[in-house]
Structure formats: C-alpha cells, structure tokens
Image (cartoon, rainbow, N blue to C red; front, side):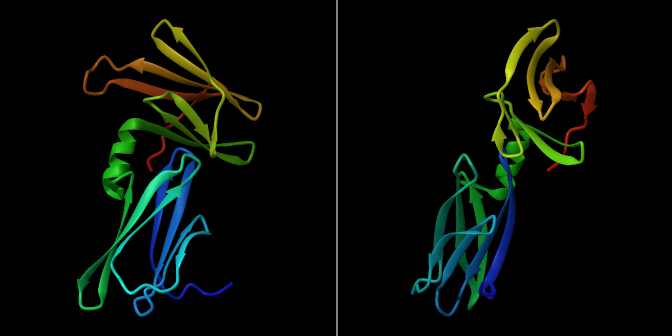
Length: 182
C-alpha cells in the first residue's frame, strides 16, 4: 500500500446510511487526482495538465452526488471544497439537520446510529434501510421497527408551535433516546 503523500483534504459526511470519510490526493506537479470514499479508491487520474477543476463521485448506499472543487488561490496554492448534491458541505449539513433526525445509542455493547428522513419517513440503522410499520395514535403517529431484539418506535407529535413543527422522539425498550448532534 503506497503512502498517501499528496493527501490535501479529508472530509466527514453524515448521510442516512452512515458517516462517510472522503479523502482527496492532489499532486500539484503531476496533476494526479485520487478520491477515496471510506478508504476505497473511487477515482484515480495519474496525469493531468489542468491542475484546477472538479471531480464528481457517488457516496454511500443512496449514491449521493459529491463534487470536489479544485481552485487556485495564488501561485501554487490550491483550495479544495466539497459539495454534496450541489450545495457546500456546510449548507448541505444545515439543510440536513432540518430534514432528518439522528440518534446514537448502544444496545448490548453494540453502537447504533438511527436516522429518520422526515420527508419520506424512511428509517435507517447502521447503513440499512429498516422495515417499518406506521400507525396513527391519539396525539400523532408512531413508526415501529426493531433493532436486534429491541422494539423501537419513533413518535411524531405536533409541538403546537408552527415554527417548531413536529417533534420526533425515539423510544427503545420503553426508554427515550436523546437526539444526537452531528
């Protein structure tokens, strides 16, 4: 395994199927560009005359579109920015916190990351889309699923305030799990 000598940028991107590590190598003499996603080589270009430009590649189970922009700042200095679905990483993550809820918990010594996609009500756990059953209850809805032998339920209840909207709570084995901040 060759040592990554031209590693210029590393990003962590939280998607529904997990947190992905993106690494970028840029050889400013050869023009080499290599993109790794979770340690796996996605793109390799060994020789390029153009040192600036962009590389687009898929990330995660849902093949989310990621683009690395390479811009010259001054002389031989370069700036590398990551876009997810056409938005800067910062904008994407801000928007994502509005469209998803994430919980991190430990059950029987195993760590789990549960993500609710609010627009589709899809539930993900450690990279797998879960089989769920939804039901209407007196004060809102409940989405039931299980993790190993643990019964899980995401309750959706109106906050009564328009700006806050709906409050989602994860309950595992009758225990409320606090939401994670990513």
